[in-house]
Length: 83
Image 1 (cartoon, rainbow, N blue to C red):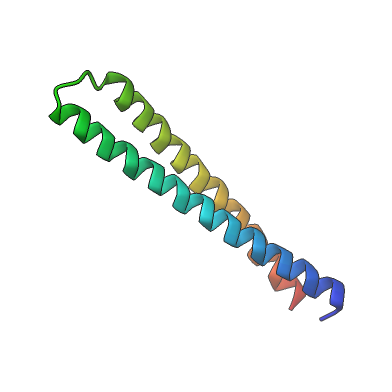
Image 2 (cartoon, one colour):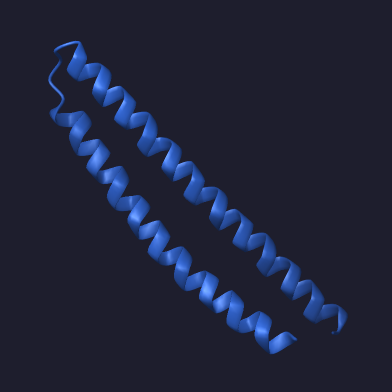
């Protein structure tokens, strides 16, 4: 493998790790919102806005995952070509 090809592979590996970290951050945000929503309910507060935010976070996370899978597949294709 040439030096440039190796550098490209390393860069794609870093990008993949970044995508995984973003996904994990999205999961943390959804979990935090779910906990907040539970607390608001327990305290008798109106939860409509918190529920909308949770739905939005969940939809965004789903989109991130779909997008990430497309990128992961493309990285795998590119890595296969470099071997």
